[in-house]
Image 1: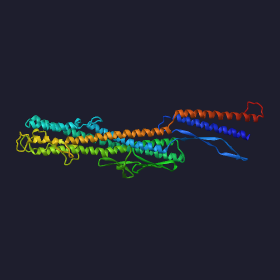
Image 2: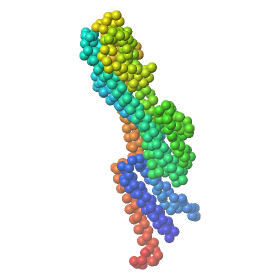
Image 3: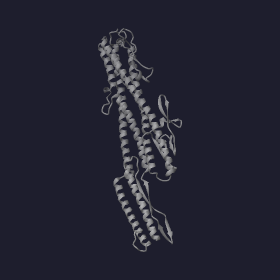
Image 4: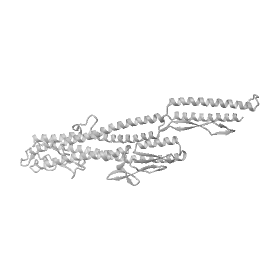
Length: 465
């Protein structure tokens, strides 16, 4: 009877283990398309054996679900997500700059842009004035072209400012999203430490990895595994975001009109890399200021050169030439503030000093400014072409980099999914195996049950078991 009892216990334990395995398979299938889900496999373990009269007896086998995850591969995916997100945010910002100047991947010609056309039109109007310095319409055409030029500078500068302002607002929004995710991760750390401090935490760990993956889209991270199955997260420059069950919120502050990021009372903006925040800050603090500075230098260079040359001539009233463009005292902000200083066509000093008001000597000199080095040791058209070429190259480089980073991310994600994702073919095979095992255990249980009933009834057939 002892042997029959042991055999019944063995079959019962087998039934329970097989049922658990079937449940694991069913759970995998139902979560095949669940984002962040890591497939589970069944691990089988014999129960403790009992030794009686020198003979060992086991009361069965148990099964448990174990998530299939590669933590190193998961971290590589997260790190690549940070790199790709930064390049994507930078690409998006530079595309906006391209749109301001009407550039594209197939057209980077300065003369085809609104600003380039305005520069050319202004100097062309001065060339036209050479032939008819006394013609009021020719003088008016110069003022009209000058107004178009200043409007083009103002528009481009204001749009660059709008892009910068939009990026600045995005910094604050992204910091809020980061803080929400770090709070979630800290809470999951606490739950995992309580429920499963020494083993894979299954669904909770999936949720934590999903939250870290989302966080990786926003900011660059360093990750360390700690005791009790916890995770510590810091920014790339060492600011702690999560430690155990505690999250440390980032904050923002205004510095020189820009939104900076603060961690533990320290401004960490300059050291942030990775994720959307890294790309946004790179565009806002590096690319956009460089473009705005170049635009200011060009506006200041053209305006200063024209003003200086106009002052050397005589205007339509025979007086020394005055200011054509109003400018700040330095190049900073020139593109935003440059304006035409006069509405009087006679203010154009076409005549050279001593020629009289009908002369064209100074008009020739004004027109020759188109070939003079007025900005950065280059002509106006040459400087603008170099500037727009840099914008186009930066945008193209960001696009190429983002494409490459996305390809790498896709490859790493595929590697992870091939390991941790659910294969319906594999689950179908497992289902068949576990069903047959369950049926075999049920058959053994039925046979043992019949034998024990027969033994208890001394071989007499009865309906009582």
